[in-house]
Length: 395
Ligand SMILES: *Cc1c(COP(=O)(O)O)cnc(C)c1O
Image (cartoon, rainbow, N blue to C red):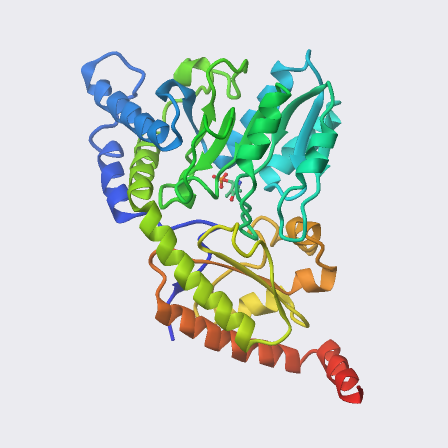
């Protein structure tokens, strides 16, 4: 069977054909530098401002609060580093969670080396941040709270509004990495008291290498990329016109289809979860049962090596992930799975399946059938499973 079943939409998504179509002229005919004066460039500039308008509308923000960047990682770096540097005279303490994306975690670790202090807040067994612990961590020197909107591995959605309230009450800036939530869940930066927000094009059927940072007016903050005067002097570099146009088009499409898409993905995801939990023994569902991204399922299979599972699924044309794409290069189990309290050996046997609106029920049925066979086969080769069965039979 040579079909491709793509179930790794948290890692990246397919560029929507309509988005591609909107981008195309800006690669070829409309190539003028948007910062130039002549009217030929005005076309590119106008397209960028239209995209900015789409993004602002999705977030309930003002247009001059949206900055285009080179992706989600850059936006996270910018928000955290620039806040740290701009507010250094106020304090040197940052609060984040233990389950952030590496773009946030590694940035915080870098700042620690420069003398900043960072509190990494625990999550409960469902992956929800412990609000009491967060409140208790606040110091007079706290300048920033950075907590992700929804987790990329286990899909858990955080109590963003509550965190925003806590931050506002204590006059601390609040940044959220919303890369997994943007275009998938409703977001209102004012209602949620968000001061900074990161999102990325390629997670919403848009292009790779383009992202946004929402930055509330009035937040004192320096530029991240120094150079020209682009993006109100805050993010230098000639605009990636096709990318930005694509981001805007993807946002518009995501907004229009969000409700219906979430409903479709959630139904199919629930069907997948139900079948896996019922038909495969010794499995655990990771993440919250209801407060989770509509397209995310994450399982841990006992006596299984996630890596072997992925390879065998790949042989059937199935693309999935065992934790985050960024951690698959290392042998350590994912920091997210360890943070929700999974022992190493169970965390190692995890599988993340993330659906899209293109995923069909037939594909899910095929995946479940293959999973059953593969897991049985892998377990039949596992000495640990063998010992476990012997132990069970002696009881
Ligand atoms: C993908 C992802 C990022 C990184 O975005 P890029 O555009 O790939 O740099 C950051 N945070 C989360 C939660 C993500 O899922």
